[in-house]
Amino acid sequence: MEAGAGDIREKRMKFEEVRRKVGAVPFISPEHGLELYDMILREQPEGILELGIAHGTATCYMAAALEETGRGKITAVDLKGRHSGRRRRSSWRRAG
Image 1 (cartoon, rainbow, N blue to C red):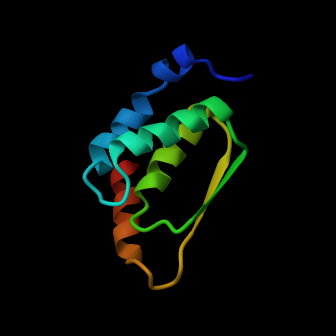
Image 2 (cartoon, one colour; image 1 turned 180 degrees about the vertical axis):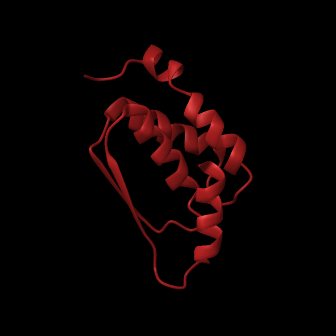
């Protein structure tokens, strides 16, 4: 069942929670995070593969959207040593 625009607006609680926690982390703005979040709510994918995760902020937005839909799995892959894994884990902990 495809989510309509009204359903998407009602499901922004998780997005706002993540935005408050990771909104200042670089590489993705809250506006672009919202675009990803809304697309995931609308399309309801069963799986997401993210290549190049940097600080993990986009991962947090996408994972929150998947949690909101009640389905799906995200796999995030980055080049070894490209960015600090410590920073990613910090973003993920903040986002819950």
